[in-house]
Amino acid sequence: MKALVFDNTLKLDNNYPIPEPKDGEVLIKTKMVGICNTDYEITKGYMDYKGILGHEFVGVVEKVGKGVSKDLLKKRVVGEINLACEDCSYCHKNLQRHCPNRSTLGIYKKDGCFCEYFTLPQQNVIVVPDCIDDISATLVEPLAAAYEIIEQIHIKPDSKVAILGDGKLGLCVSLVFNALNIDYVHIGKHEEKLQITKNLGAKTKLLEELKETDLASFDIVVEATGSVNGFEKSASLVKPRGILVLKSTIAAKEGLNLASIVVNEITIIGSRCGQFKPVLRLLEKGRIDVKPLVSGIYNVDDFESAFKKNQDKGTLKVLVQF
Ligand SMILES: [Zn+2]
Ligand SMILES: [Zn+2]
Image 1: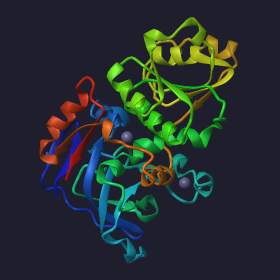
Image 2 (image 1 turned 90 degrees about the vertical axis):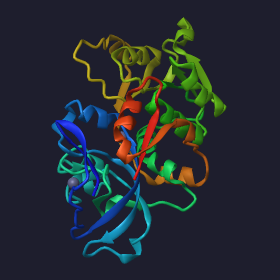
Image 3 (image 1 turned 45 degrees about the vertical axis):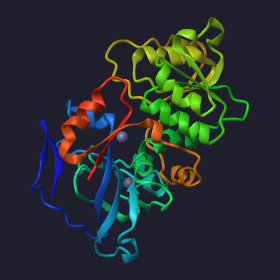
Image 4 (image 1 turned 180 degrees about the vertical axis):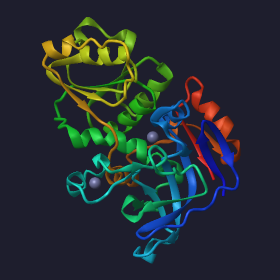
């Protein structure tokens, strides 16, 4: 089968062996895969990962291993990316994403989905309702990461909320908040990206338009900038005793200025992957339109163009078809 393998270099292997589903697993035939910044970071050495890339997908169950219901055959599915042990205190609390024994699809100790066939445990797969198209289904994983915020904090109807950052991550948070009828302002540097939020009928503001009076004025700020400057700016917008939600992993080696966090007694919450089901429900009800996030769809044979497009300025989501 075709598989996009990273082993110091990224290359398309046309003869990679098709895996066999083990007991309790399903074999999935890939339809579409999303390129994530994590994939790009892996090609730069992140996680020391070697193997097939990819963790955002939609596919069809082609084969089931022992102990898996045949009802899943031919069903279109998406899947949670963390493969957990199901036998530790985190797994017992339904927090498989924090299982200390986990491997992660295409990121850690498990071949990813950038290939024609791959396996997942049956408890990881979720059937996609017919009314949700392939493009929307492929974006469930990043949208679930945005929805995770809702699981972590209580946003009251009168909470003053801001999202800082207008890249893919910030826009996914914006789409989810809008779908949930949260009142927020989306702050960013790029007029054309903020336009996606504006088109939803939500409030936007360019970073340069922020005024002195905006400082320390928000109950909740979601940081989705991926930069140290963005982190410090986000912190400066949070009210005393407010909440700062960190969505981007800021790989900062230089010193962070945390004085305002202490002085204003700000609660910082780290936020990563989320559950798929609530996002599927929002998509099913037509509350989220992902199309404005898609910058290009490529065939797997043209993966080089797809990865190049992913690095271009202004690109949002790049998808690859199988
Ligand atoms: Zn991702
Ligand atoms: Zn576990």
